[in-house]
Amino acid sequence: MTALDGGSIEMMIVMSEGATPHDVEYVLQKLAEAGGRGHVSTGDVVTVIGVMGDREVIAGLPLEAYPGVDKVLPILRPYKLVSREFRRTDTVIDVRSTKLGGTHFGLIAGPCSVESREQLMTAARMVKAAGATMLRGGAYKPRTSPYSFQGLGVEALQILAEAREETGLPIVTELMDIRQLDDVVRYADVVQIGARNMQNFYLLSAVGQVEKPVLLKRGLSATVDELLMAAEYIVKEGNTQVILCERGIRTFETATRNTLDVAAIPIIKQRSHLPVVVDPSHATGKVDLIEPLSLAAVAAGADGLLIEAHPAPETALCDGAQSQSPREFSHTAARIKDLVVWAGKTIG
Ligand code: PEP
Ligand code: MN
Image (cartoon, rainbow, N blue to C red; front, side):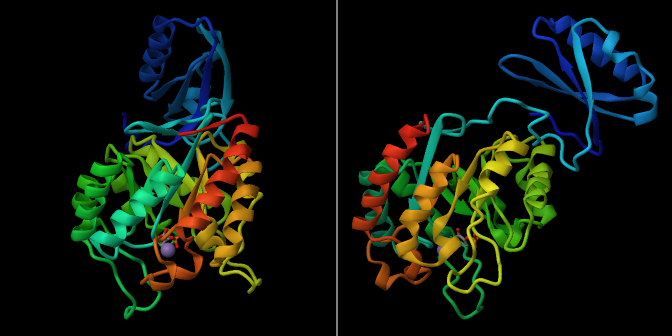
């Protein structure tokens, strides 16, 4: 991983298919001589070099005449490394024995929060049996009221690790504050950044420096481009393993907790190479909407789902009304499987 401290990518050099490592080295050397720098991204087919430096000086170089250079593209969007232009191929997240992105569909499920060892172990077994590929569970909870259950902290992280031990499912859990970074990174396989922290730029930069994938949730009132710029903060630090999550946005509609922005799925995929998952639980707040919106998400091209599921939703300390029971979750998991195949993907 290479960090891009301080620099901003001004243009991209797309190398031709037959370009050699020597050609790439030559370009990098010329950029360095002009006081610039190149960030090399080697794809399956072509290599792309993101160029940092003084735009005027770099523009004076005969870049397109260098051996192995196909074309030079100026960057007009406010994000660069996460853009489709920068990387044509889909980013695939590889976590333990499972993948998410490209042709790999991730099914992440589990309770809103870890409430006890028994509750979480039961939840882990149930989601595993239904075909989930990762287990979610909050240890630190962002609650609207300070009097609501705030999570079990490190104890919850240890319980999650135990569930991973037994089921083999990688664990996804939220990091709320930089003070919890070491603990969360020690136990989690995927570090979740919640909607309320989507623009906590110090936190984003901090997780950009860890070697664990990050699941970044869209802010309650953030645009798609704001989400992509938040992801750019992470990738810019060197961590390219970012999963974006559409979890509903605030609109005037009150029939649901938030409004699931289905259009955001294909839009994100047009603008970025990062995988996108959909959280129909937080998007709607209603358990009976989870299945139809899960199906809609798969059909619209999502790379995965993040579903709240609880062994006994009526007793949940957090988000019970939007959590599926074991029976409901296995029903939804079975129904999305056919659609995942239709979409040309496999689960996990
Ligand atoms: C969660 O996934 O537990 C959560 C709190 O979601 P969000 O940040 O999307 O509200
Ligand atoms: Mn929740």
